[in-house]
Image (cartoon, rainbow, N blue to C red; front, side, top):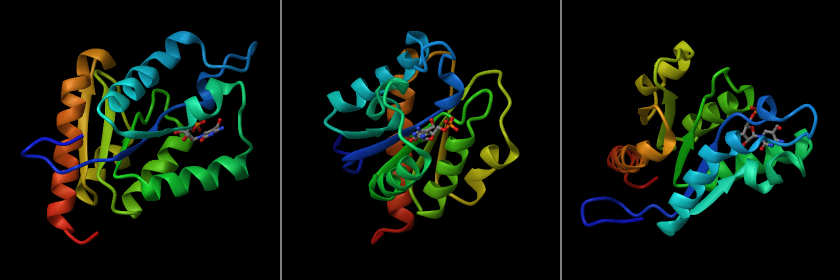
Length: 166
Ligand code: 5HM
């Protein structure tokens, strides 16, 4: 993903609620809950980005990894990614909140996707005071794709301007 006025971005880590979305009967995410992730994965991959996403990797719950395995892998993938994009979730996703903390500690550019009209943790809303964060307030993900692209570019540009050698 690159344009004349924006930096190159090669990889993205896409985070969001997982355990709380698994159906008790099937152990998998119902189709409607997969859609926002699937739309974003396709959108980013169509732009040539490498997308790291646990929901797809673990087949939407059908092949759930154990805690030790997924924690180590996710942290490594976040550290390697050019940008972190995540849904903190409503209700809040515990795992995603940990990942947001890692991303900010690693100095990654961060894009947080917040549903319009919902409330989020003070430390999510205030993260912009200590990290390079862009917030996108959305009603539905497909309509928000242009705003998400702009937010990714803004976050990456700001972070690279602040730390050009990182
Ligand atoms: O707490 P929750 O399951 O909502 O955490 C979701 C986040 O933890 C996702 O962004 C994903 O990257 C990570 N995760 C994972 O990689 C979580 C689980 C728990 O089901 C998992 N693999 N199996």
